[in-house]
Image (cartoon, rainbow, N blue to C red; front, side):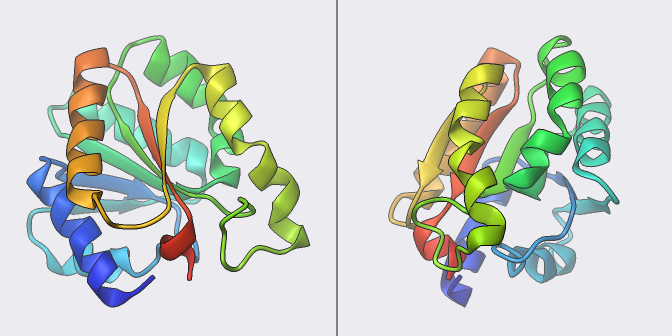
Length: 168
């Protein structure tokens, strides 16, 4: 991802009210982490598992924060139980920031990720989680603002799936 796009993404999250991010580091969107660490508007919580990251985000939301949970696409499979039984069942809004490893427009796609990447969108549909796929940053500010507004209106997790220009 180009540095300017990473800056716009982080700025958009802050302006949309996100103030806490749990995450499992990955490769496609990793440029956002140093920017968030330097920004006093964000509290970050690294985790050893995407399942833990979702649980942390849900608990932090229940504690009054506007949270996001950042992971790669394979993390959706790992965190399905927490998403379904905790976040969706309890109706807790969390913004899922998901890099689409193995997706059609993943600029670094390989056989390691392609099978899981093909099944990410059907996984969101099976969980009935609203999502939007972002291929470029043309409307990143609006897309993030809309996602945060939607997650709060639904009182459920909402996902932004990053591919294309975000995966270079």
